Amino acid sequence: MDVTQERLIPWVTYFLIAVNAAVFVYELAASGSILGPSDSVISGLSFYWPTVLAGQWGLLFTSIFAHASWEHIVGNMAFLLAFGPKVENLFASNERNALGHTAFLVFYLMGGAVASFGFAATGGYNSAALGASGAIAFVLGIFWFVFPRSIVTVPLSTQKVRTIYYLGFWFLMQAYFALYGGGGAVAYAAHVWGFIFGVFLAWGYRFKRYQDVAFGLLERPWKLSWREALDALGALVG
Image (tube, rainbow, N blue to C red; front, side, top):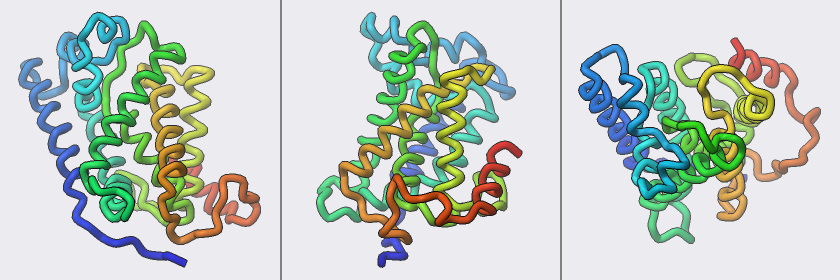
């Protein structure tokens, strides 16, 4: 059984965080406020399907790196820092992948694009989307599939939870809000599509499973700890 993963420096994860931070600084400068980006700046960087169809394809990628508020970028970068390094190492250490770290960057951008297109195709045609959460959901999908029983620290917290529960409940919550509405301006459907694409790619890429080589998508839930499930659910809604 493989219980550890080769530890490589996650250069791409750090690079992505730096780019997101730089774009946010630009948003603040363009808005003339340290409190957060203005509506006009946010609108100019958002993914909006009719605008993309009109030829502004660059918005598909600028929207992946732009954010609407301090809370928005801090939350997204905390998740990327928590889950990105291990997923990047999967690509970098895979013997079948000659691109290494670069492959993680390419698929990260692809995950963001799939999330944006999925959002537009499932009800968000006339809505703008902004933020890295769709691409990060792609990272979470891979992490959930490859490291199901690993213990992770909840981003921006000291609480430790089991991956299979924490990210599993997270996905179910995003799916519920995407179907029935969760209020606010969160593009829940983008999270759903990004996560699904991550799971599908991890399965298709035949990534090695860690800490639980016998885990399967249909494994009986009573084989696992319900106390851990409640802890993970509490971490999400608490």
